[in-house]
Image (cartoon, rainbow, N blue to C red; front, side, top):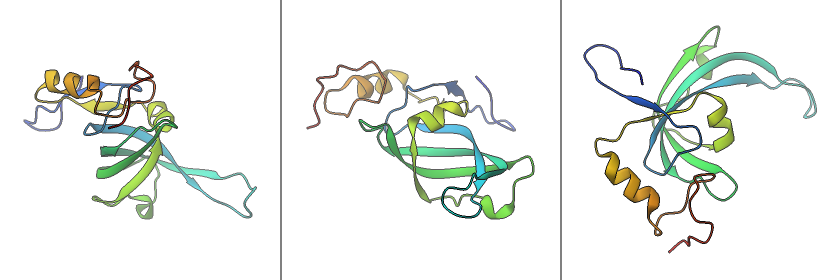
Length: 136
């Protein structure tokens, strides 16, 4: 757990793949520059820390739709690699878990457990939910 800056008592919980819709998550990801033709190896040009709200997913293939809430450039990143607040993006859950994923603690964790265990909400990829849970 880590507290935010100033007097803010923001609590981040390491979550791994335990991500559901409505979570606010934070992770680090590399920034790649595509060079040359399609088969050319990309070059890493920096890193960024992203804070985003999970709008939908993860689906059966692990894809999530996220709404960017904040982005901090790290190391020698270029300003043009900054993600815009309010921008929607797609990421695979495995990509996010590679980047030391953490989720913002809910004010009512019991409500989160209820949502996570609901058969009316799509199960998170790798969450241990029943494989026969159905979308309604």
